[in-house]
Length: 366
Length: 126
Image 1 (cartoon, rainbow over the protein chains, first blue to last red):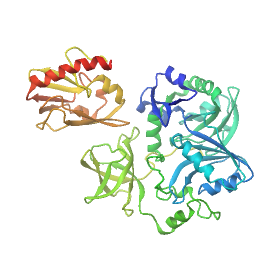
Image 2: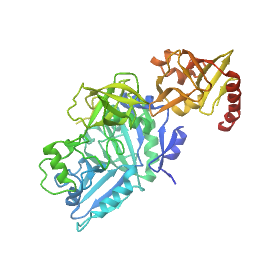
Image 3: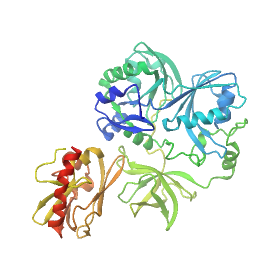
Image 4: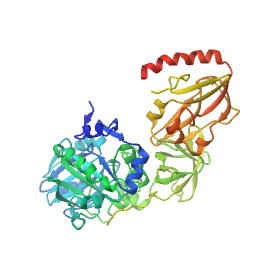
């Protein structure tokens, strides 16, 4: 049985094309992926991302426990800050990537991927051991709405959440919008400035409808999962099941920036990660653009001098750059930006070139 | 679906407009609707021959690639070159400006008879 988010009636009323995704009926698109993508790059977009999971972790050992299950040092995290991290297994493979919010010294919120909620929950519980923590999966009680784009801050300001009170990038606060208490973080998955709002399910529709009305003069548009994927890909933000999986470490995935070098406490997967930091990796994630007409898709093979050297993880036509592009793992780690390889698309080899990631400049307000 | 009169459709959602032994082939508005924004078209070279049922090219939306299949055996006599630069023409007008290829059919009578059966299928997806 696929689940509906609290906003299903809104999506239907807006004429969304709905698809099952990670066990949920979700809007793929409303007026079209390219139009929605461009709205977020130029103005503002409103996303229903209520399929994401929310776990609350509390207790005396909460920080210590979280520091044991992710490479990041959660014991150093400040209140009202959000940090990007990964749940790693013994081989440092990525079980999921997630955001951790520090609400108070002994209280944290974890926002995880929809497709991984039950796997993550079991993993976390199985590693609880003697830690003094309580873990609650409240995914079915909360809705998550993302407001993204250069006009996001102005829309918030207009509805009374003044710019001077808005949290900085990777921070959050609680505020009252339309008379509803919400959690609001300066986070997102598009590469643009923006916010993510956590509200109780029963309040979600009121927030959603009012944003679309108040955001009209700022050219807000509802945006579906189709554009969410092209936006995150242009921003080179990884997606579990594509760039990330249980056989890939954060170092291989180019996420070394989210792995502190000086963390003394032990954590699951630390040995492999320390080893890779010291001795290097056998595969790496690269961004590419295709030079010879063609669009590469997830699973397409990468060839160099007749040798298979890797696999595409995500690929599409960039709505912003109007160029076919994507991300791939290659096992020839000596290849650098501007080096070329070939991608097998439907049996024909197409020349592609390694380019820097992200493919668009990020517009975070820090 | 809003398939105009005189157009035959295949089960894989190609359409055929038949004038003499030359057939114009494109994709149905149903296929266009399913694909969404079309961003890339791959077409065969003029002069190539294909068997009925073989893929002759691909149409790609932002989300995915779909191959397109020959409704009849024949030789490609013309391709719609403007699509290579402006694939969105298909989204705007698939039955006229958005055609893909013209084919000189080699065993038209039999293949068209098959295509006529597709008319029934058309009513199924409506």
